[in-house]
Amino acid sequence: MPIYAYRCEACGFEKDVLQKLSDAPLTQCPSCGQASFAKQVTAAGFQLKGSGWYVTDFRGGNGASSAAGPSAASTAAAAPSSSPPSTTAPSTDAS
Image (cartoon, rainbow, N blue to C red; front, side, top):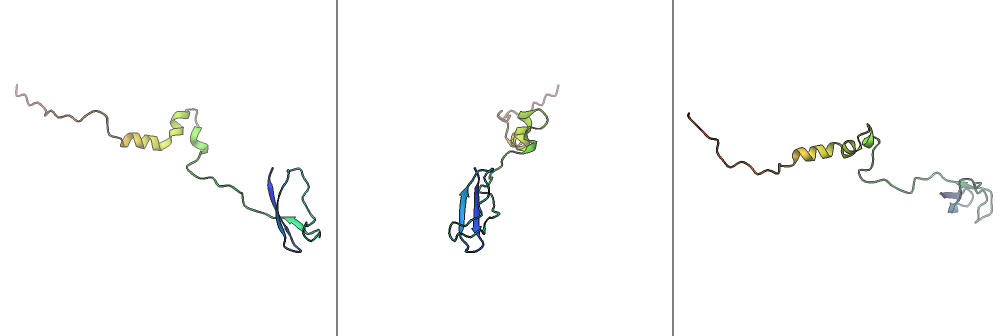
C-alpha cells in the first residue's frame, strides 16, 4: 500500500497516511477539523543506484554475450595471455 502525504490548507498540519489505492482521499483535517486536508505531490521514496539492468542487456536472443556487454570484451582484450613469453632466440640457419 502506498503512503500519501497530506497537508491542511487552513492550519498547515501535515501527516503521512498509509492507504489503499481504492480508498477515498481524506478531506477532513484531524487537527482543526476543517475540510481543507489535501494530498500533496511528493517524490518517490527510493533511489536506484549502481550499474543496474538495461533494456539492451538481453536483446537479440544471445543472453550470455549481450549480458556481459562491452566491459567483458574489453577486459578479455586487456588481460595478458596466460602462456609465458618465449625465451629462445630465433634460429639463424645458413643452410
